[in-house]
Amino acid sequence: MPRFLDALNIARASDLVALIPRSCLCAARVEAQGLQRFDLPVPTPELAISAMSHERLDADPGHRWLRQKLMTICRAET
Image 1 (cartoon, rainbow, N blue to C red):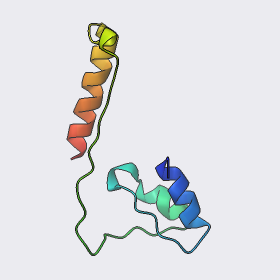
Image 2: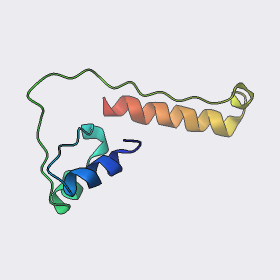
Image 3: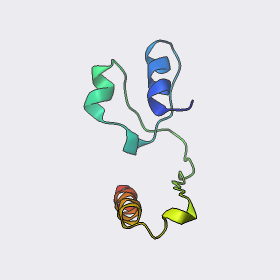
């Protein structure tokens, strides 16, 4: 699925299971949609989070600030 919310919508409307990273879910939101959260009974590999930007933006202070904020947030979630 291109987006995790699409997978949740399909799971809600069917008897399928959606595998969604815990960091993308809010328990109240999932339960409000009539879904249940559970841990998988098997280990799964870590997800890699990547970000790319054009090299011409490397020196832009706004883009540097945004990239740094994103990296800080993503590292805090792990």
